[in-house]
Image (cartoon, rainbow, N blue to C red; front, side, top):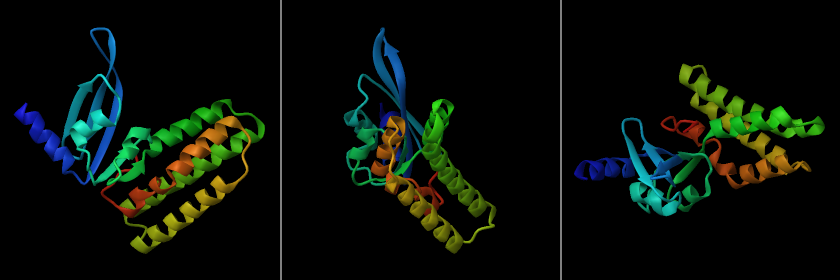
Length: 187
């Protein structure tokens, strides 16, 4: 227990945490395996619930660092935190939508995917030293403007409407990794 408390304290004090949760069984009953990772440690928690209370057990209710997560609603209750939405989750969602979309319904997920992939390319160019900090800021502004325009477009396909609603809710959480080099784009 003392070691767990010390690791949980380390996670709580981390400037960036990557949380995730997966289904787990305890005696045949549904539970959750939680993982909270920073660059050096991972804390696991097995709990019956999958809500804010369980996440706060490890993070603390006033966590004020950056949470890189999949957009799951209880993480939003950490209001002192900065949030980065996991781009891998969004790209996977676009890929799945593109596999079944027909006609004009392909345009929206394809455009979202292109914007997100462009953001990852900006990150890669920054890491390679081929894009200056000013260039990153300009590119980030352009990507945010592209996403703004795309989300303002008129959509009718149900899947596209759901994705657009999710993106609007997390619009300020898409490109934090371009503002801060210590934040990854994925969890």
